Length: 208
Image (cartoon, rainbow, N blue to C red; front, top):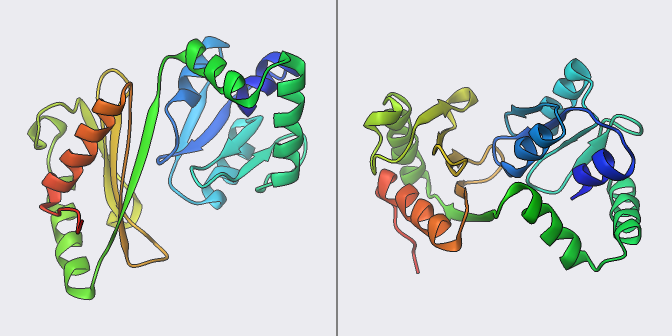
């Protein structure tokens, strides 16, 4: 929504930077305005470096931190809040309607994340299972729906893509004893199926 505000209200057409765990709505919106979006590893240090390299107007990550070329190349909640308010005022709509506008422009998008606590032994086994997945080509991955996949840095996980822009991300947290499974798809059913696929690919089921 903030990216659309910068592009369409402020007329600041330029690239965006987003992390592997962030919405694919970002590159779809960039393409609509004839510009580019660049994907980086998790961590704002990667986002900021890519913003400098590409002269991006916005960079952000799934946790909600956004930085701006015209202000700070760091997570700036005050600027983000002001931009959101100005976007709502400029459109004369409620927040929910502004979000719906973005989805109408770039297509429906549903996102989910599941955090799985890992005891020491399970973390070791999970890292080994992730390494086995990373070694596979996309067509060899379980469930057979992925058109390509990429390994994350330091062997911490894998991201698998589907042709329609849906994706599944499985990664070990770099700061906590957690395995995180993320998914984005065009429907709630699509997301649920991808989250289940993530559990199945590592043979890890919800404790609940």
